[in-house]
Image 1 (cartoon, helix red, strand yellow):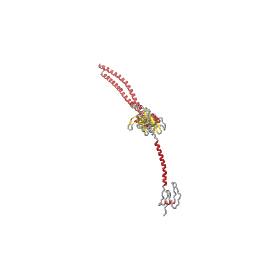
Image 2: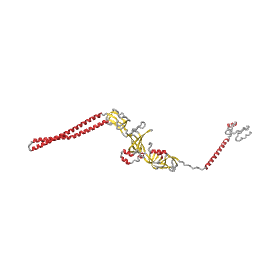
Image 3: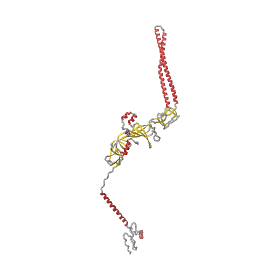
Image 4: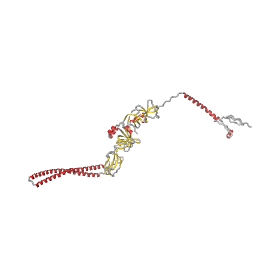
Length: 508
């Protein structure tokens, strides 16, 4: 029986009995053990597995332990030192804000509305007589500016001149008849005087014959002849007197005829004048509807024009905008105006400015307040205000400042009388109906205020603040009452506020 080889010590590879002992090689992770032929055979033979060597993994675990113990010792020392030292109390952090000190200011209330420009006066070129167009002025074309008195259109007036001559002849005829009546009246007066003398003689002769007939000196035949002569003389005188009595009536008839003819003559002269159409005031031609040699009838529209003396703009303002503008208005002044637009405008004491915005350019015109349009619009709660610009076509600069002609959509800025000693804050400082104050301990305090009226960038208060108090104009988030405040006076905000209350800058 063959003896079994002795077991190799732990960590060594077993050596067969007949093999000489080999030199030991240190096995490390960096220097693995070399494989022998027997080990290769055992490896390739699954029936004889080679036993594993657990030494390398165990050594790795031992190497990790010392650093862990060292870290635990250092952490314990640090914690013990920290727990032993006294803790400093936490300091309250102040919130940085911008502030403004309240001071009384003079406010110029402003309001802005929009409207469409229209001329104060417009005129339609209407033919007041019928006839053929003889000539048209070269300036009578769309868009042209025409001075007052310019002859725009000439209508053929020959027919009217002939009718005028006929009427003049009829008047002359009637005047001649009137002169004839005057002459006849004078001659009849002389004839009546003669007839009256003859009547007196006939009466005297008749009286004498009547006395003689009573004494039987004159026969009856002579008496009858005297009577017939007397009656004949009376009839002659009566005829003349009747003719004279008819003369005033004839004179009235002729005078009426002359008056009628003179009226016709005046109309014919007027038609002759109307055949020449002139510009009644400075105009801008809006449209032309006539050509030369065209026959026009009475009442036909030949064109439309706009006056250039003045333009007006009706602008609507909300009732909230109107209230600060009329804060000094008294109703007794309105009643005293009695509908007079000039007196009413003086009572309102408003000034106005019209602005035309075109890209980067803004053109401005000084305007005068003419009055209100009389009623509010209940749907949008607005009141119409009317302003007028004199000479809207003056100071025109091509490509920079256009004329203020019909149809332009413009902004109208109204300014009311100054309001003194007002408490004013920026709109950014208002949070609902509250403001944030800084008290004497530099802490935030909330306070409710009552608004008098609002403007574009500021608010005028009626109650809630007084001069000398400080408010926060920035927006602290979160705004907690009692929080510590580090306030810095906002000089730029104060400067902007003063400019806005003076009415400087544009309203948007």
